[in-house]
Length: 231
Image (tube, rainbow, N blue to C red; front, side, top):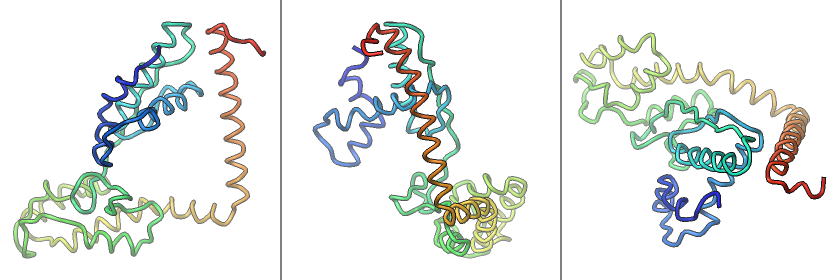
């Protein structure tokens, strides 16, 4: 046995998602997602998986399954590691940016839409008037400056703290920085939107390569397990 249902039930990400959805009885169809994810990682012998922190338990499940297989049969599969990145806080100041929560800026957002969303973003709740001293360290918008305007972070922090920069101006600067970051993504998206045939070719070639990788891995897996009956 590689993993038990009870072990899957103790996955904190699964438990939190079940709680959010109001699930009481958890069946394998829901619990088994990390196992399917492990298969997607293992078939191409991935060693590094870019993902959010909430995926750490899933990647640990994949590592556990890989170790178990290698111990039982042969060292065929490499243990994957997770590569986590910084998470953007939501525009509403609650949790991370999430499309489903409606507090995110999409990669294809129009420049005006970026500014409009930031204009509605939560800021320091204690700062009522423009001249009031701000508290940037608890302001969601300042966190965007720390990521996208690192060279100006100290200046913006000081201007907010002493009340010489208002939230409106602060948001405009953040919006400009985000639009500069998103500009190449918009251009590439527009390019491929007009060239559907290229997108299809890329997908077809990617599928071909994935199938070949899976075929080679499964040959090794069957060899290790002694079940190459039909080769």
